[in-house]
Length: 294
Image (cartoon, rainbow, N blue to C red; front, side):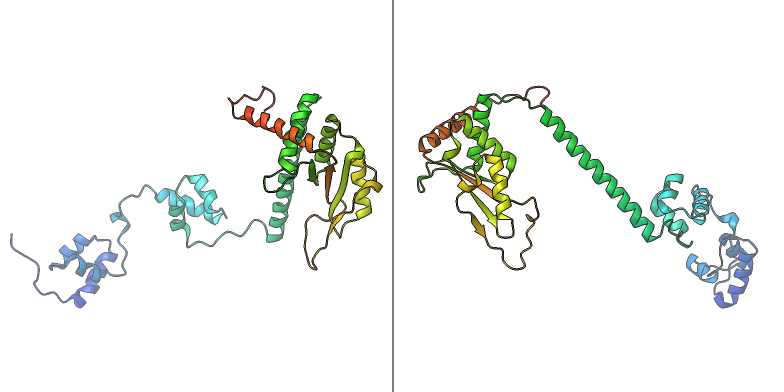
């Protein structure tokens, strides 16, 4: 087939013709044929620079409809997440389709937003505290009367966790217990009663910071233990350093109570033996918790 194209076109002279043909609605192939010259794709692109292709040459795009809907929703003030939920399109696609449109105005100013957040947090904390109280209340109701044997085991484990122990390098063959929890002290005193320890054998002393009310704390622990306040030993008072920011302050702080039992070496050895019995049992096959306890 004879070559009808001219060999050495003047590209600058051809550009007005190419643009006119493009604006007349011709495709790239039609323009090349009309010009009658050999043009590479790059050369033709250069001639048509800045001229969009006619609509009829565009291939149909399945997402065109989604793009138009996304733009309409954005113009109505919807966020990317809301448009995604509405159309099912990806967030990256939505961003590409509507990024030239202005951002929607915030629905709430900062002050109402903070108020809404504070109300939500307050509600959440109240519900969480109620759940805690409910669980604690239900668990406490599972414990009714405690037998002497159960109290013996409870007190032994309590002492071996919190009480002082005898060591080969530091002999302490006596019962000495210190704690700041009034309920734990009450349970410990009940245990001592079970073991036959009278009040006059209990020597109580306070370990407390100097910022606390010593007289009030002494009366408080006297009421818990049944040991007269005047029989308490000299307290161990810790001086606070200037600028110390302790959390254990306020009217509920009453220090730690130390209870030493006189002439308790024999009793200490018994407690040690009871604990050995418990620990030997714990090393055996595990038992299941009775139903209703969990």
